[in-house]
Image (tube, rainbow, N blue to C red; front, top):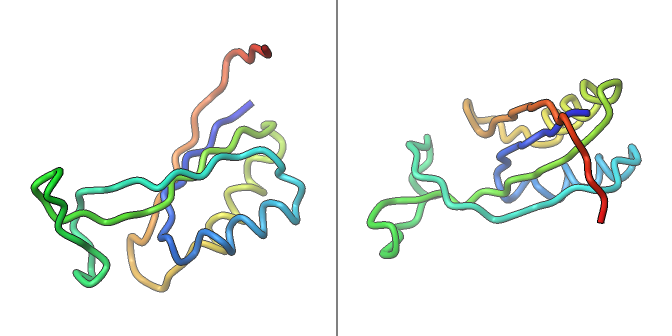
Length: 102
């Protein structure tokens, strides 16, 4: 199994969710995250008094999938998360070695 972590611009998250659900990727998590990074558009940033820096609020998507569906999930995320800007998001993939239910 694989775990995908994708950092997506907030205004693209709904399209990514719809595409994943349509393809029957049923269980995934979305979390608002604050990133301290240089963006092309300073209008997307806000100054955080909590962190003392300009931050960008994005959505982190976490999805676990079978190895044989990894490329499909990556393609759906990439196609639906594009903003038209360079470096508008990123995807990380990790191996899952164990799964425990409770």
